[in-house]
Length: 294
Image 1 (tube, rainbow, N blue to C red):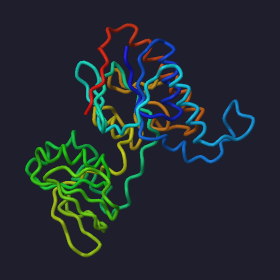
Image 2: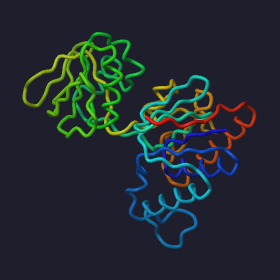
Image 3: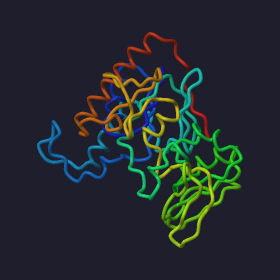
Image 4: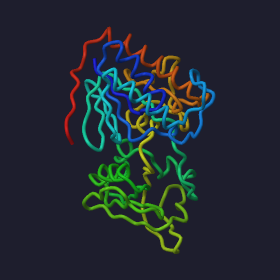
């Protein structure tokens, strides 16, 4: 039985430990340690007589998972698909799994751009796979400056009239897809009447477009959940008491599910999700796990 965990924070590592001890094949995919790495001193976590830094706590957690035999990959996850098992796509490879746990922490806040929230669902989208169909042969933009934005642009260029990546003043750090343009100017507002009709830049010029796809930073757990059809409420993934989403075999744990955003809570939720997956997979036939290079 093969389980892929997206995220190497307290929830993801906690789940990995339980799953591996139950005999599962466990792959942990994470670009970094998330919010935990920003904590200078942690004093309210069980088992430490002296404060410990978030960076050190993360290092110890990852090393423990590796010691037990979990596979750890520093990769950025772009999307998750389901067809006779889960397919997790990253910037370096493709992973097959019988179950997936989303544990990348709380969703980032959308950039503060006038009109962004007002046009959500009316020209502003957070999922190229979900909504590209509605923008066939239309000019669209992707808001972002890294590989995640490049990935969304790659999807959109297959059906859209044109695709422009808007970095909003940030340098572009991704790999620009063929036929995709990049504009680094600062954005003043997203404009339109009933739906989006253009982007106004701070220099006073306007780019006519019909849709804006937000892909700032890396894909959060909520972004990935939306792409596969899992229910979300705002920036949180909807789960039951065991961390299960409405998509069979897809679980979420930690800050991405809301509630008390604490390390102790994330560890507990990771353990609960792992135990639920163990019960689920021990009753089901396995999909052979494999890793394919990009």
